[in-house]
Length: 543
Picture 1 (cartoon, rainbow, N blue to C red):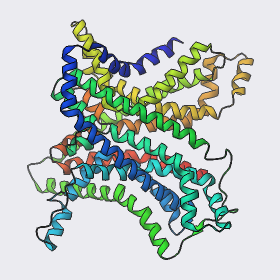
Picture 2 (spheres, helix red, strand yellow):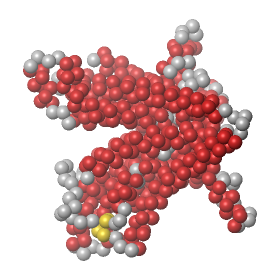
Picture 3 (cartoon, rainbow, N blue to C red):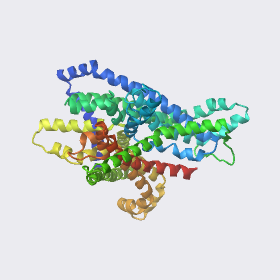
Picture 4 (cartoon, rainbow, N blue to C red):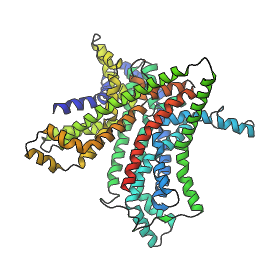
């Protein structure tokens, strides 16, 4: 039980640090709050509100259209689109922003080519709020697509066939059967996409948008105001908590949209075939999100990297070997942080999940365990910038109370702080995977082992470990990939002279060195393909 208390304290500390900042309200803090309400806060609220509304609408439309198309209709290429529509999950929004900026800016390839045909032509600026909305929609729609597709695969085909036999036209079947069936899944996926949008820092900073995450970063590092950063972080934390509540409600409703144990059988019910023009429309609906969300950004980044390689090879004053060594150092930092954080997250998940299987816990301990699990689940929804501020605030208070202590230096000057932030942020991913693995192990096996005199450690080592190795491997890979892609927490907490692939790609793109940013950005995308392939394999096996 002391282990659970320690885990609870570690996971709760960043959030408690944000909340505790409001206990230090004085005249200066209130004056600062009123200044923010008059100046920056309306802009942050307005930008975030427009992002939330537009991204929600976009991901719901794209996710619903693609899920309905591949789940309820039969056409050539459907099996390819089923897994290819998940590819944008590997593309972080900030990486896509770097690619599209080079392609769509005034001096980019598209506008330069169009001006040769139409002199004086100028396309809208990509570095804008509409540009950010476009990027978020086509990198985050897989959340709604995946959940809606699963919901439709459970009962959608059967209900659509029943409606057809009753004489209902195709358009009415989609409007009155398929979409209401997928609505809870679409809302849950939209909530997840919104949390990712609010947690993003790379797109907002690169496009110069006034969002909460960029505001937190400016308040801490530019204005050097801990209280301003805490106030903004608390507002963002409240918004994320509301979204998390909405997502949980959607998941609860999602459970009622399917029948346990029921599956779609192609031999009993055939998908509606599409012909000619309908097939072309299906290809357009499914192909456009893949092209805009993954294929086009990857091709642009490959072109940038190739041009950079040619430029360096033609310049005798540039030493290409040094650049490759620096890239290896950035990759090593990313993979090192990812591996260590993944190991720690899996260890925490194993401890929480194993203790939760113990049925003879007292009521208070059981309540505390559930509280810890919920806090771990909320950590994934909390933006990295909020977690970073929640870690730094107690350190600043401790430094002011006891200037001689070395805790602040230990956290900020070493890898301890950033690893702690990763653990708080991504432990939920490991917990969900390990709990899913434990759900497949009957409790009677534990009871039989205890009857034979086995201790708890022996049961975990000899009985559980061989049965959980797939879940542990999945948890490790998922956390590893999330750590490699994480940007805001890494920017705030990384040790001096320790850059990761995400940080260096952001810094190079900010300095308009997009060609040099292409290689680390493509590496992040390649690593991000790992969970996409895992999900695709699992869906194929289930089908």
